[in-house]
Image 1 (cartoon, rainbow, N blue to C red):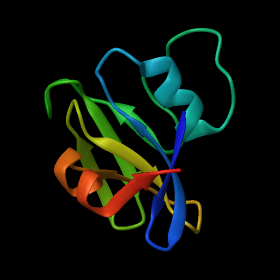
Image 2: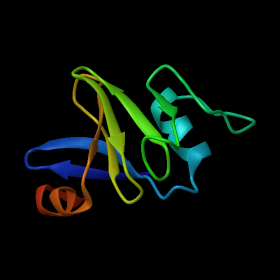
Image 3: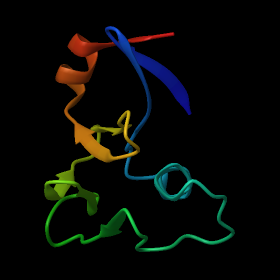
Length: 94
């Protein structure tokens, strides 16, 4: 997992590739897992809603994360998806 900074706030983020479910689950649930799972407290998978199937439970409701989107942990511990172009224009690696 890489760290990124939103000027001037630092956040943790990971990019959803559609093939990194274990990493996404560990990031969203903040614990290591032994086997792939299809849901958790902060997310679930629904392949009928979106290619890649990742749905993030945010403070504003459910948001779809497409393959290539970044998943950000906000300053208050909330999670939300971000499109790659917006992420690139807003955050820089630290």
